[in-house]
Amino acid sequence: MNAAVRIPTSQYMFLENISWDTYEALLRAAGERHVRMTYDDGDLEVMTLSLGHERFGELLASFVLILAMELSLPFTSGGSTTLRRRIKRKGLEPDKCFWFQHERQMRGKSKWKATQDPPPDLALDVEISRSALNRMRIYAALKAPEVWRCNRKMLRVYRLNHDGSYRSQGESGLFPFLPMAELHKFLKSDEDQLTVLKRFAEWVRAEVLPRYQAWRQRSRKNGK
Image (cartoon, rainbow, N blue to C red):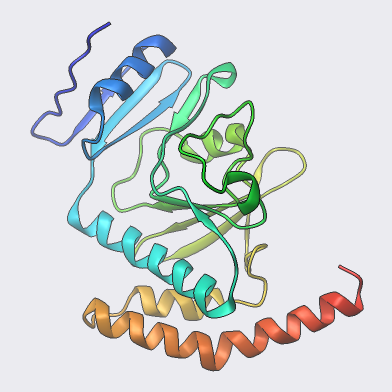
């Protein structure tokens, strides 16, 4: 099937009764075009992303990268790669995603396969334009253990429970030593992004690194 993707001037399109094969054909046809496709059992949402959306996503992803570098945490970044499971008829693109605990399994890979590879340990999901579909239900079908959802007013951590549902948590499972409220203050800053990133890196070195070192010591004593 040779499908052409045309985004309407409203920058949003919602389609029903779309087969999985058509969804995959649209993904191939879209190629590197900057659109986000969310698919849930026949329903397909196609959305272009605003400057505000991208700014928040890039800034939050930069915070994660700075954390990894300052704390010397190996990682693999998946960017906005399409994550989909045919058996569940669900797929989406996170704004950014990362592997930390499963970094070695994903190192050097150019494709993610749901039947072979672990889901991202962390997915970032920006909510500037609200999706008509339940993206958290799709993340649950993909078994992503942790999702950070954010906009200018909030930053929430969702961790996957044993029953397959998400619960909003006060702290990150990946970074339990990280004060999420303080991180969100940097995300809301009106300063230029270079200044924000510099201040964030300084804060990580001064405040987060000692917390991380203390957390590691406790973990070792507890045999974790």
